[in-house]
Image (cartoon, rainbow, N blue to C red; front, top):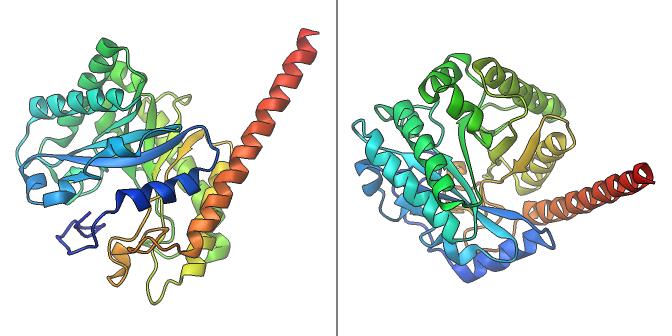
Length: 322
């Protein structure tokens, strides 16, 4: 992405190297049978001002295969209300994800946040409602393995989620396959490291409570759609590895209904830039930070534990059947 990772200002960043990216992704994935690659598309004239950042990466299909699927975020960046245009944009996203073998389509990105995120675009929630309706309809028409969801960022805001629920309506709210949370503990507001697990649990519990009060069924899975921790002169790479591991293990070891967990992002936008461009597990030249190996090992451990749970469930089922 040739843009600042937080406020999207244009930047001169090292170009994407798809072959090196795929090799890094394969190492992270290991033998996990299902692995999501998060990608972004921006709708609206404001997106056109971003150059290559309007679609990141430029060709998501090159990353699929071997169990990898695309999690495509359809961002709403229109300077004027355009629900019909966004609905068509989302239909195309569903068709593309279906063509790539299935995956997720997230309708809107952080609509609870002001510009440059989607919440700063006029008519955002109405457009997201139209987009969700279009995504569900297109999925049904194609009979495609595409999950449809929406998300928000940070501490859940009851007023925002009431507005989201009102825009979607009860039927579409119940039809969502997941609700996403972009969570960046200790990034924008520092937290003592020993308090981090408790803060993470509080954040996700609040998200579940607020969304349920707005009408989202409690059985709806939660996806951690973005999480990360940047490096710079005051945030060293060893601490990045520790923080990412602590946050991930806290959530994955909980019973909070989180079924998907996605890191932001694979590599730095600009390693000699500010912290806002250094969220990567890799430097911008694709060399690994310590966090890369930490997360690779965490994914492998979580996969083995999942296999053990399935084996235990199978054994108990056999005993009951006997």
